[in-house]
Amino acid sequence: MKLGFIGTGNMASAIMGGIISKGVIPADEIIGADLFAPGRERVKEKFGIHVTADNNEVVEKADVVLLSVKPQFYADVISGIKDKIRPDQIVITIAPGKTLSWLAEQFGKDVKIVRCMPNTPAMVGEGMTAACPNEHMTEEEIEYVKTLLSSFGLVEIVPEKLMDTVTAVSGSSPAYVFMFIEAMADAAVLDGMPRAQAYKFAAQAVLGSAKMVLDTGKHPGELKDMVCSPAGTTIDAVRVLEECGFRGTIIDAVQTCAEKSRSL
Image (cartoon, rainbow, N blue to C red):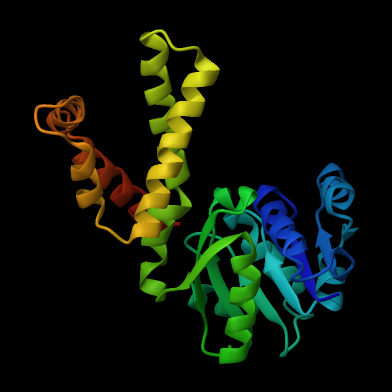
């Protein structure tokens, strides 16, 4: 087995799906452990991977181990596998707030660790993942991990001091965007548009706008100005957003999220 998952929830499934669909690692070289039988059977049926209820079986059979359990379970999970972790293995973590130093302390020995923060759009192959390797990772190993992570979206290496910021600006932000889409759709429904159609119009507008930022390389403000005709409809809507503190509210929300991540 090349790749092992401890935890087979939604994020693990998104990562598995990307890796398998891109042909990075075949399903028969992936193993997932989960104490929750329906969870592991779901990924077995969906992806055709090997599954087990034993975390140590994953460690024994995998070259790369991805910890995809909730942050509050990390200490217990690491305690149960640390003696089995080999010097040549790579451990990938996706828990907010769990620093490289904290992880090293839990393992109690030199371990190759990459701290990551993906987001839920990974489930549709459009994730944004930040990765931060520790000092035991080689450049070749870092590139390999980037290949794994890029199978379900974009990935960038960032300094660890930015990981809480990443949690706020991409890890948690899909929730803010979903709220924005829902609010725009509600307004369209209020104006007479059928709800299903309203969701499609609002979601596609967000998708297309995000793609314009990435593909054109233009400043978001410049792209906004392109839509705002003199004395037009859009600039009037922008005025209302500014009067209601739209940008300030978003900034406050992102900063609050980052602070909460630091406190975990």
